[in-house]
Amino acid sequence: MELSHLDRQGKACMVDVSAKPAVRRIARAQGHIRLAVSTIKLLEQGLLKKGDALAVARIAGIMGAKKTSELIPLCHGISIDQVSVDFEFVADGILIRSQAVCIDKTGIEMEALTAVSVAALTLYDMCKAVDKTMEIGAIHLVEKIKET
Image (cartoon, rainbow, N blue to C red; front, side, top):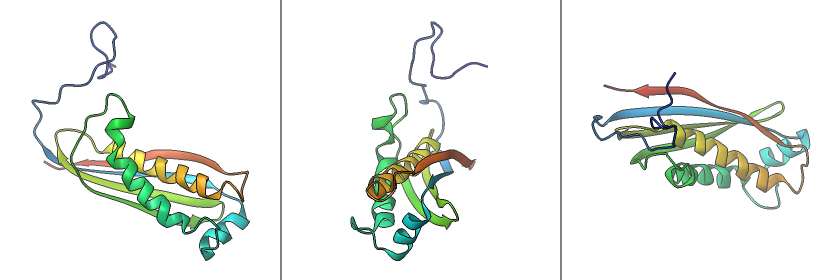
């Protein structure tokens, strides 16, 4: 298997997408943050001293998606048309889901993954004063659609 971000000499390089057509692309990603039951209750009831952690994490995830090419060195800067970040309370924490949409020559899965990652990190930051047991994990691409 050949890696697309390496040139013939094995040096890191940005992939040339100039010949590719712009098409609609959708990516969905998901992750999980494990929380103590007491922290879940604080979040559900909106009683965290720092404020509405889910609202802050949603906006942070969207902002993170928009900054993906600045964070990941060989990632192309693309025109993002839509990003959403949603949360679902589960027994041991919160599932974080994102969807990102673009019409471009490449991309959008890294933006969806970044949205989930930044949202999870923001929740961690918002809850760290009350929960020392948090774990972020299971961040993965759920689906990538390329419409032609």
